[in-house]
Image 1 (cartoon, rainbow, N blue to C red):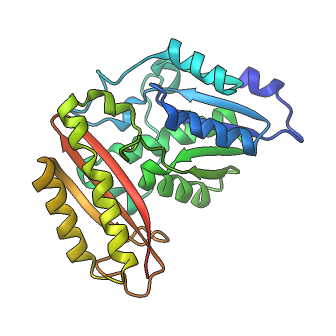
Image 2 (image 1 turned 45 degrees about the vertical axis):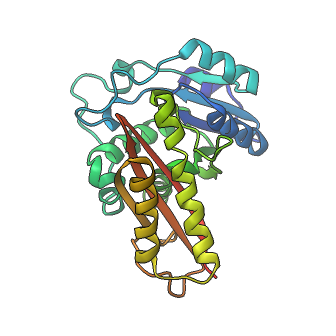
Image 3 (image 1 turned 180 degrees about the horizontal axis):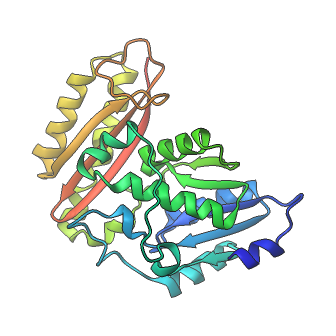
Length: 275
């Protein structure tokens, strides 16, 4: 990758990195579309990063479909694919990590305490290897995108971060590589996630501001209507990612949720306007 990067023009041509773990779907490919609109050359990394998986998580069974991923990426206009081995990314006695404090310990961090440390470390390594001018991440992983932006600001990475919108199925379910784990019955029930977010959207649009009440209704919709096991339903100030219980004078709040259907854990979010 570094040899390729040395041969790429360093003046005048914008290079964009699209980091992925493979198992590509239309959500990933929409990131490529965004990259092509903002850059001249697109590099996609495909790497199932072991350090962002906790004990008992699905690292071993996470789908690895490099051949079909490469075909899809090429058809969409990706110029280079970087698919390193674990031994390249984490050589023996790898001891250095990157961590964004505070915001990494809430929401996803409460349930996956080592997750974001692995994410920020591998993204920092990818930035150092590929040296992109811009990188595109998906809004579905809203907390991750916020943390990456914070890392870039705090550590002075010379990379512009673009966050692309969530791509959804016809029933509103956010596209995810983990959706393939759902049984037909679980897949049908999972549509309630989008319904609950739309309920919150309409509630705030109607003038309601008590987020505790809205969260209680969302919780009932999800747990009562689908049997999904809720890890969290929460609202944050999108500017700081601090949890909020009342919309108050905010113009927007970000609703986030994580719910398990059987063995499959899904996350979703939606930016909500406050009337």
